[in-house]
Length: 139
Image 1 (cartoon, helix red, strand yellow):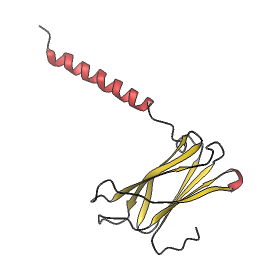
Image 2 (cartoon, helix red, strand yellow; image 1 turned 180 degrees about the vertical axis):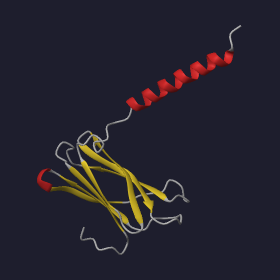
Image 3 (cartoon, helix red, strand yellow; image 1 turned 90 degrees about the horizontal axis):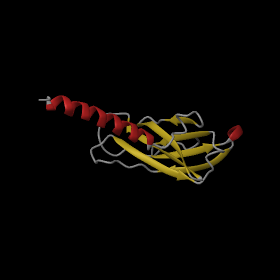
Image 4 (cartoon, one colour; image 1 turned 45 degrees about the horizontal axis):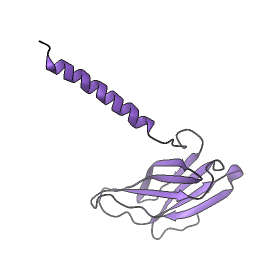
């Protein structure tokens, strides 16, 4: 009689491998990881920008990521984000102000996502800047 545990273990390994491969195939390309677009993050004293992803969404550019508090307390992160997209020779193509939201009220991390009406093929650089409420908006 065969050991049922050995059969189940092999089945679980095969199932896990198939799930992993199919999950990776469904992800769209992050243009920042591919080197097609460079990403510049400018943090403030109260927050750090992390995991910025830039994706082509048809004729638009989708910029998303996370922002995290620099200090340990939970709660809302004061301020907002400026997202700027540059083309060849540093020409500013579009800029917008973005809000972010927490998925859980006790979280120290927030998420942002913006669709920008700019041709992804013309963009070369994305700059994401966090401004506190009282910051100078020169940059």
